[in-house]
Length: 157
Image (tube, rainbow, N blue to C red; front, side):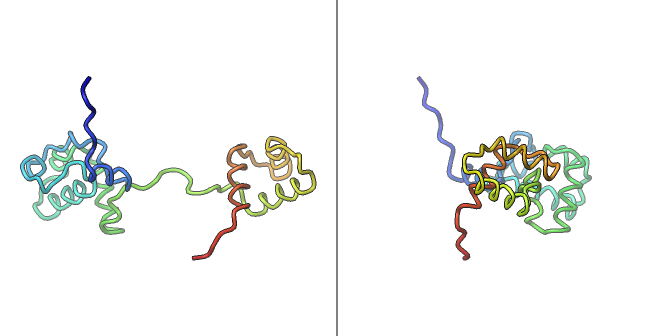
């Protein structure tokens, strides 16, 4: 049975930080093919070189997109992000909500008060009570996580 090849440390770190290029095989630029300094797995390096190639060397957007394995809109988005935020703008952003936007402090306090008044109250019953009082639908697990984080004391740094 063949042994699985362990990924190198750089690949693991790129993956951990979200800077691992999901399609390194689609990068066909000569620098990334011939020079070991240029790593097609490094998304930040690929995007920066893509923008540099267009801005400094005046390569067309179509050619840049083709050589770096991305769409034209991706090149334009990277260009705008770089102009707005610099190098950090080239890193991918997390999509979706960043925090529980439905579970305000008022809702959590209400659920805590419900549980204090009736300790045996289930989470499903709390979800139903929140829906009746506030008119919002909250997932059971979201409420459980919010209540668990409320119980943990936060140490200011």
